[in-house]
Structure formats: C-alpha cells, structure tokens
Length: 152
Image (cartoon, one colour):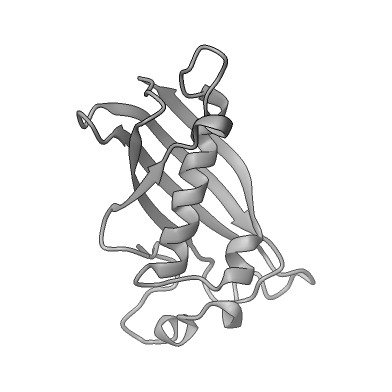
C-alpha cells in the first residue's frame, strides 16, 4: 500500500497520555500507532476509503515496549501496511464474503533523540467488504498484478 514505511508525528497530550508519574501511559502506545496508521491508510499510494478504515478490527498484535517519553515529547511513528488478498474466485463458493486481512508493522521513536520506544506488528481484518469496495480495485484487475501477492 506504500513504498516502505511512512513516518507520521504524534504530539503527546499530557492530560490524556500521561500516567500519575508523569510518564507516557504504556497502554496508550497502541492508540498512538492506530492514530498514525489511520492517517497512513487514508493517504497511502493504495489508499483505503474512510468507511473501510473505520471497519478495521484488531485480530493480533505483538509489541515490544522499549522506552518512555516526557510530556513535551513528539513521537515519530513509522507505519508500513499491506493487504493480503484472496485469489479471485477462491472463495466464490462460500455465501459470505471473506474479510480482507491487513498487516501493519510499526516503529515508534522519540523525536528529541530518535530513541526507539516501541516495535509492533499487528494483523487486522476488514469484514464485510468486497473487492469492488477497494478504491484501487481496477489496478488489481490488471494482468500485471497477481491478486494473491501482498500489496504494499
């Protein structure tokens, strides 16, 4: 969907993002990734529509928390998403459409010193969508694109 990782900035909001000790609340780290991911998915080379982005559902996430930040910090988040698409006709015998599977790799850094704060990989699904719902569906019909390959 992109030509490699795409960087986004997230400015911390102290009244929401910090814990009682004045550090970033670790449970908010995935939220920062999701906020940046949303923007990347809406503006990627192969962008998704807002209704599709709204229907993302997390299936699996694996993360490593490596550092923390102060209240005045800006975070830099590298997002690399790709879609795993079924081969056309592969699921035609089933009455229900198969969900799109999305994979997202993220790295989050502190802007002040470029220190790595988090590494995460996630698998999400977009249920109830068909190939025609993809804004770039015509590209997939091209004989140059193998529909079973991942799009990135």
